[in-house]
Length: 594
Image 1 (cartoon, rainbow, N blue to C red):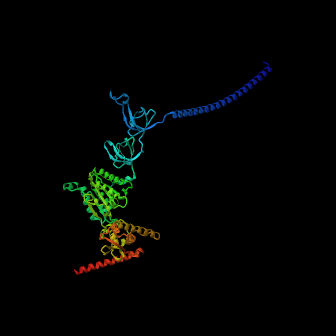
Image 2 (cartoon, rainbow, N blue to C red):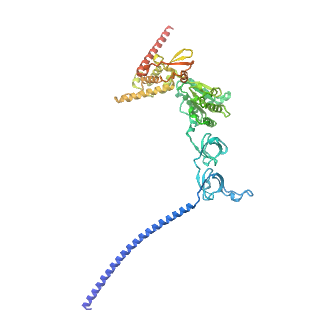
Image 3 (cartoon, rainbow, N blue to C red):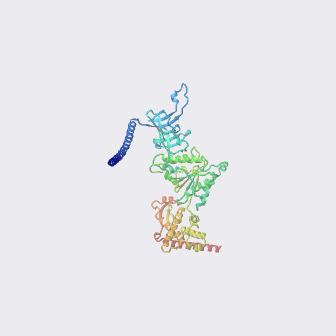
């Protein structure tokens, strides 16, 4: 091949190569464009799929809504009884009536309907609420309702039936729902009921019923009570012996007393004695035997609705008999007894006592016995209690709880001022041991409280025969007064210590004799306005003073007694010491003469 020919061939090859490169670049560009178009189409396709899915869901929701709107509503009903499948009795019933079925109360009518085969028959229990479809077939079990009309259980009948009292004193015999089959229901319990279905759904705990609920025994023993040794011995003989030795009583033909009346001035420990009785009965019991104490404050039972107070009393004794029948001693304690059981005919308005008193009498000596039940009443106005309650055979034992004398007051002081109480070092330095210090402080406080000197004269009483008598503050002391005096003294000790700490961080703390003396003085000062001189006889009855009829009162408290209490304490203390010295001199003179 010639040279020009080779040149032309090379040129042609280069041109072809260049053309192929251009075509390759064009193909690459077209490929890129196609990939871009494919990606865009893929994105559009995904969006279309999402839109189609969303549209499908909306269509399905709309279709379901249309179908639901076309469905008839479900009906509520109450299950009365479930009947499992059984064999038909030829000539008596059709085979269709022997299939598994449910008796329900629907719209006030009693129906026997079928149970959906998709439901568990064990869940269909009496009293349960169910749903019915348009063919009145049970399609859902909802459980029993907790709302309804409120009623009271009047009597617990056989087979779990309950006699309840509803509005307008209507009485109904009702069944329990399945959940209440094994639950104990007592007379007086509040329950929710459905009168139409005849079921009791639930037991309601009402606060107004709690005043008759049995309490466990208080943690108070006879050792916690001071100055009432004689009264404690009397009530132990009357109450504890029949409970702890019933065989001996039966052997001797003795009937245990049905009730005890504790009466006397306010604050003398009547309630404490009743609580200690219940505690002692429980402690003397054998094994796991315990006792129950019902602390009923008179005004708690009063109700403005006619018959409610009587119902409370019936419920109270029904609960007591329920526990007593199991062998447990039960103490029913009526505090402020005169507020409930006043003398019939003494009222000025409603005369509620005309029905309350007979109800109590019927419970105490009615047909149903009160074995293992003792009634204890407390009152500071025993003259206002109906005599029918106080006669033998009802409240057999009557114990007067007197105000403490000086020796008994020292015993009561000893319950509150003990060696464990912080004592001031200055007192310990004088008396040595803590026991001797406490004894000295108690003796001084009691001597100050019971001093019969002009500075402690309280009131002059004029009797119907014209005679007069001067009463001192000591004549109106009580266990509650002594407890309040000790509380005051301890408060003074704390305040004195806190005030001293501001100036002397190492100041000593503790109770002093002067704190007790000051507290007694303050307690006396606060009582000066208490006598009701406009009605002397009423005041004397309330205070517990015994004697002839009182026609007048004259206050003898010195005006200065309301002044500086420390000065008053000093004056009375000097008078006490002088009085004691006079008694000591007289005693020595008598001894020398003998």
